[in-house]
Length: 193
Image (tube, rainbow, N blue to C red; front, top):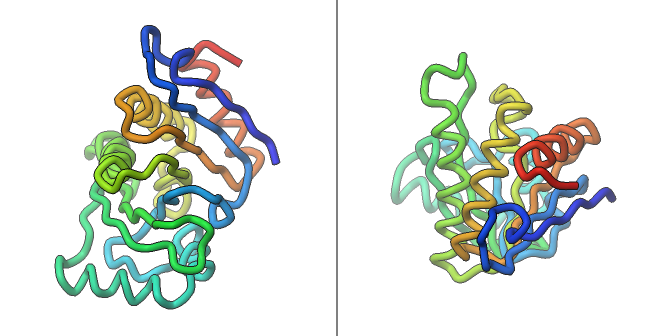
């Protein structure tokens, strides 16, 4: 497992936060954190990629919990987030968020993607969660260019750490190429490593 770690003090000048941002090449479903984030579809019914892997690892109770949310509130709009228990996962909770389907970058996709990270961190703060792990939201079948998604994600995580939303944020990438993209973005954004 590759791991790169920085503190928010070295990310954002003047920050007194003790939060830590980690970039990992690992399996999101095996992260022992307070919450993992699911790159879900609006129906919260599971699917392929990260979403399917999380539903398989969590067990059938996760689907039941998601159905209950959709039955009460309707489909989850892009950029928003909801929380469920983690059931059979090492993570205590799953925060489900719907990222944008990338069209051409001119239809609010960047702002919606940033909102997925902000809303997930807001829920973590609301539920007093201290550690959270994210996948590369919208970078699979939704087609968001990874080199554009990485700086958006890292900026939002750094901001959340600086504000004290969580103490630790993990960016968990499955593929070596994705890990390299996020690491390069971190080097450029934070002038470190």
